[in-house]
Image (cartoon, rainbow over all chains, first blue to last red):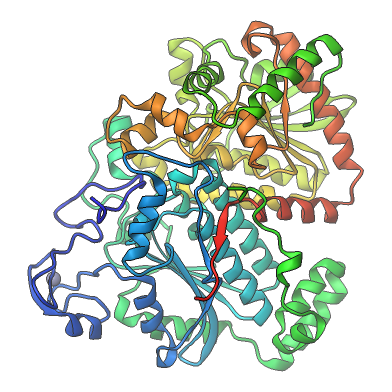
Length: 336
Length: 297
Ligand SMILES: [Zn+2]
């Protein structure tokens, strides 16, 4: 029971696209591909970026594995790692929410998203990576807050923000406060945009519900992993509500590309190179940055200019320190 | 608690009712379920009922200028206390035929895009915006997905967040899921006394969390999505009273009570510089949530 992701509005099992986390675990260190049944040792699969070497099936990855694979030398500094879920509603469904959180934490991750500063192929950036294995990657208050802190760190450092999503949507056990995290991620992206910094999305399987209907839809550039389900409403909900019979590839990355909702379907093994190249394209030469600061100052008045100034790494540290805990009070509702 | 009562008798009763609910944190299951029934009462006033009473001069606009028109969202501009006001509202139907026409209040991407078309006009012409929220959720359909349901909701939130004009979102019935929040990123978010605001409908939660369609009452009690609780959590800035027995009992009086709150709030918001409004709007949504901090990790 505790291994089953909960609280997600998605996905029934289908032959072609197995549910994340259901890849059969073999004795010892081996895993089998749910699509072609090939067997791999754990180190083989890790070396191949958790992609099946035979059929290219993309296995689910934890956020830590994502960051290890993307970061130059595998080194990254976590942002807001000290935040943990609380239980504002004292919520109980088939199991108390606190127990669900405890058993999810026991598997190693501290929440469904991990934010970190790192460099990809020499390009500094901030990455917010989600983990479907933690309560279905659902977005509660910690996910919203860690995403917002990631965007704020990107603004402070003047670097782009990348997010990799794998989520069933809002975390229902946190009720309407979980819903409000959608708006919080929008606020974070608004600040990032005002600082003139790009937002790059990587949609992994699955990206659904409130995550797809908030920040995940707003990438300046949006990649999707092959076979990822990307949808606001999951197939089961749609079939139950409308009695429609859905095609087998409903909502899949390849179809979303056809319908114009993503820019490219990218094999995970090519992701570091693709992201590195993209960040290099976005990067501004230093003199250009100073010039753009000057023109923004001239054109846009003080609020915006201040944000732009903050976006310049050297300048930002001189103009303003990192926000201290005393002037950030983001959790008035945490009265439990 | 901010209220807009003018007659002290009614007001006194309202304040007592709300204070009562606020003091009972663990609201009884029956009370929450009663509120949900009232929020969805088939005779409850819908946006067009309020619009007809608040702004007799109203021009309804149709279509997203891209694909089609969504009858589940009404949008338009009207004369309100001597000035133009834009309204975007989620409209349900009352009889069987009308309910189907309005798609049971479930909005489509065309509806959100019609709303964004209006927001764009508000920005250019400096017209304040009021949204009226009442939906069981955005429409779950394969074609709605293809036409970008998720992106439409996300962009609607972003556009509302960035609007330079005063904005007020009113949850008038049931506010469920991202389909409601798409129109909810405003300077002030208020709920009518018997409205509800939740991450999902109790029926949806029952099927997913309890794996049993029959547990909606249990789900409602767990979510406690009442106006009083949303006020406590900071999700609602104020609760607007309804006539005794609910808004469906007396439309004129329900509209009058809403009018009192709206006209005062729009005036207050207009007194602020637009940069300050935007700063406060961002700050309002930035701080919502409940987290713990651990040390020594
Ligand atoms: Zn395989």
